[in-house]
Amino acid sequence: MDREQEDLQFLGFFGVFKESVKIIFSWRRIFSQITLALILPLTFIFLAHIQISQLLFFKILNDEVALDYKKEGTPSYNKLSNMISSEWITFWLFKVVYFTFLLVLSLLSTSAIVYTIACIYTAKEITFKKVISVVPKVWKRLMVTFLCSFVIVFVYNIFSGALLYFWARYFGQYKIGIAIFVALFVIYLVGFGYISLLWHLASVVSVLEDVYGLKAMIKSKALIKGKMGLAAALFFTLTVLLIGVELLFEHLVVLNFTPHIAIRIGIGILCFLLLFKVFLLGLVSQTVMYFVCKSYHHENIDKSLLGDHLEVYLGEYVPLKSRDVQLGEFDV
Image: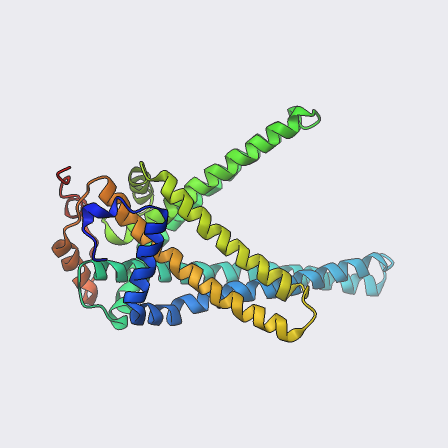
């Protein structure tokens, strides 16, 4: 990141992506090492989950169809019924294990990328060994921030469920009810997207500043003001890319829409390559977006102070304090 801090605020949609790609290619060795250690396993788990979930789910569906043709109370019926119950337990246990690994690898990847870019920003020597030594300490702060955002989403969904119940009871049977449902659904998506935006930016704040958890969410809410359109466009684009790769893999590889095994393998490899690039680009761009927001609000970041804090990787991780990252406003 060789741009001046005050120039970062002028980066637009393509500018953020261009700067992110430039950082990746300029420091391809360290990003390649992080990708091999964290992002590739994350990508593999994500795609493997789709494949395994479909296999388990269709097995359960086939057994439930077979159960309909069995006479209730017979030994064969009871045996198949018990088997289905076990399969459902296996299915949900697999989901729990998957989301646990996904969360851990996601937070570790975020820690590694944000810390690496901060070192690049301060012109500090950065090695993969240093990154790995710091990541576990930073990861704990990210977990607290994630749990706070999870609680917010949980409360948000409960409130949305209450609105859905109110709609179904008083407007569901009327024609205008469809229009109201569409409006409520759009509002829900916008709200959910906004919370997701805050969480992604709060993850960067949790690494580089002395706040985390709910305070990091509040800080990200303040930072994103004035750059909401840019942040939303970046988030929407990355989400569309992620969903696009997921649908491509699910339909052409998992669901056997392509009859030839060689084509399925080729598409699977292509999806794997595309997905890890989307993950990497997303993590780098959200960190660049943090610096863009700081620049927009004229919050200077003292590189020497930031570098001093980053050098504490051999001991306990010490994040930046607010006075270190907000040294006043630029002369504008």
